[in-house]
Length: 218
Image (tube, rainbow, N blue to C red):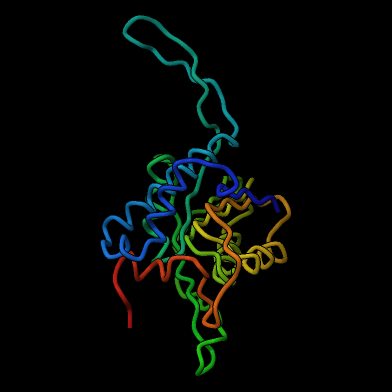
């Protein structure tokens, strides 16, 4: 599996990530969601450079010319609910893409909230057969929910290419993917943090992305 880590080079993503991580900035949910979307937009643009292209003849008021446009049929998939603003960022770039949604969430399996299991209960997706599948979920912590989403989506058909996108990953999450996804999958992440705390939250991370976007849940 190829891993692309944007934090290894300087770009405007550093500004977005600094704001996302700032606990004072996080008090404004709209600003937080907006930056998650902007990370998605930048990542989608960079990912678009890896697609295959074909010439399209365009007629202007003064003539014609050929412009290379993406040839791939793209599906942008996300994991509910935290993935929604990230997904929107990708859709701003891949505006003609089909969409898929997976409800895959973690549940603590012990009283101390130190062990987690993954529960998948809903999916809406077109066939992925022969298409370029992009699965975007902001947090790749243990990697369990991403693997569950990947396996569920592949049951709709074998895609031509798979890209997995996250805002922050951990070494544990990356290792989980390496053990469970195909070798030709590409992982795109804005940062890779050192690890997780005892409750399986990424450290330093920025907290629970779904809660920061939409409010705390029961």
